Length: 267
View 1: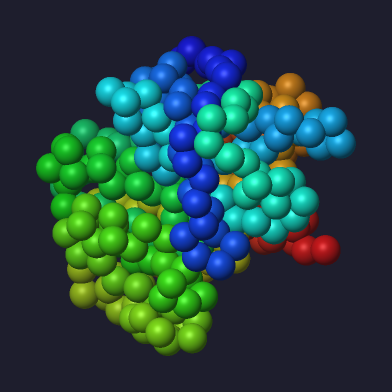
View 2 (view 1 turned 180 degrees about the horizontal axis):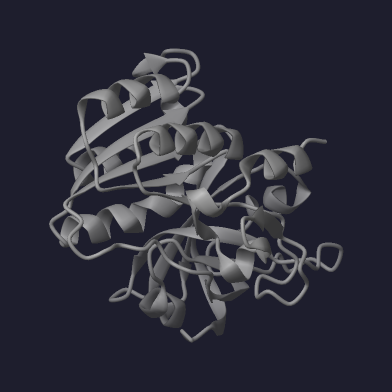
């Protein structure tokens, strides 16, 4: 079992890079050394009214510098509080948590599909795939061009990069499934990795299944403990209910009961 660390992390930077999208850089050397692609950390807000930690995927890590970078979207009071954090503040961090993206021996080509802030967990994976000599094609979706998370990083890291935006300000206008369907009709891949809104993941996983393409997804749920003790983040799978924080967040797409999970998240 990989080590987990409870670490007092120092805030090195906290900057907004798009409307309501922020980048938080922390000095957390033990976690930076241990983190693997796809894993996440659990961050204490340090506020007595908000006791539950916030799970955040790790976008970048630098073991030599002892730093990790987290991307987050301000959607409520908790993340709004995070946006007020200043340099040199100390925050309690638990990690690394969860499983990692599986990379089988012999993989030569990989397809990455990311949507919105959910693109962040694909960054370390893209670097690891490139390190192994895998040719990576990436499709990225967002509402607007300025909300294409880490666009420059992914364009520089992968062999081919394609995007779609809701307003057409970059790439194809509309859903990412349009360029994806065209791509899958003309090219073959060994494996696909997906992260983003669950509705998007459902559609992308279905297209991959039609082309008999092995597909892995990173799911998101509200997590109370982050270590599998509370059963508060369960997802319905073909093997029954599983906790996303302990069994995931990464699952084989064919194991996820998509219809049941989408229904359970409609409010």
